[in-house]
Length: 372
Ligand code: CXF
Ligand code: ZN
Image (tube, rainbow, N blue to C red; front, side, top):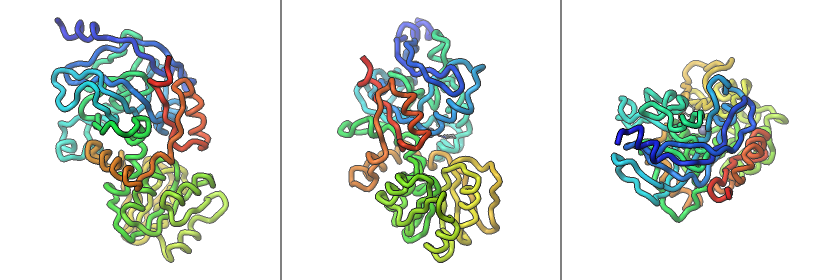
């Protein structure tokens, strides 16, 4: 049978949250998705985190000329079927889905998939890794980050799948695939923060809190969390921040100098706010390093003798790093359950609104279990 005919034969009806208008709302629709090609894995999505990248896509980046899209890139689920060239995954495996990479370029072959030559095309190209669109018959595009996890089912590849043990709930593990990996990976991999070094974390949403939990694991001190929401700052203290600063009420520079006696050895900037961006570099000690998670645009300037890193996914190899984070969670060192709030799939627009307001740190959609 010809490949296209076979894909169509295995096609199935799925439900997905579809974006048709900038600003939303997303509408849950029944659409058709082709079956897995030889190197693809069909995953039934149990749950998906909502990341700020999804929200930015809805509110700012989406251009209706792209056509309707399925977003979502913090999926977790159960393997339903694996294509015939797929090794290491079979029906029933529990998986966390992460970002996509090519596996063939120099960076991927050197174990640095976050620097993949085709990173943007594979994660934002809305195409299968080998080209094509499994949702074509419904006139919708997906394959966002190699997953489009705001759906009951998706097609992934071994490059963006992480097999996990079955004893932990998938809905808890879902946010590891992007936000939590990015925060923790920035501290542990990109910055490789050493015990006893000082660190300031600007923004205590899910990425910043993961950075704080990781900073505590590696023994950094002091660990300073900066945010505008007192509730988040309280959680930051509970999860490892030795000090917190409410940047709406306090002068950040003065407080950091008081706390450290100088500046900080490391900073993690996750707010995207111009002022915080500038301070994350200005308040570095000589030899210090700033990790800029929201892109290096903006009016910031880097004082001489400092390094700035623009970081993607915490330089993590998902298959190595996510199991490491799970083992920290098991030991009580990375209590990600403190960050998540669960929503039924049909509450997706409320979950997005709560995340934008900051009242929820990491929304996670219960997908399969909440649909009739
Ligand atoms: C990242 C992922 C990889 C490319 C740049 C943006 N954001 C994830 O949410
Ligand atoms: Zn993300």
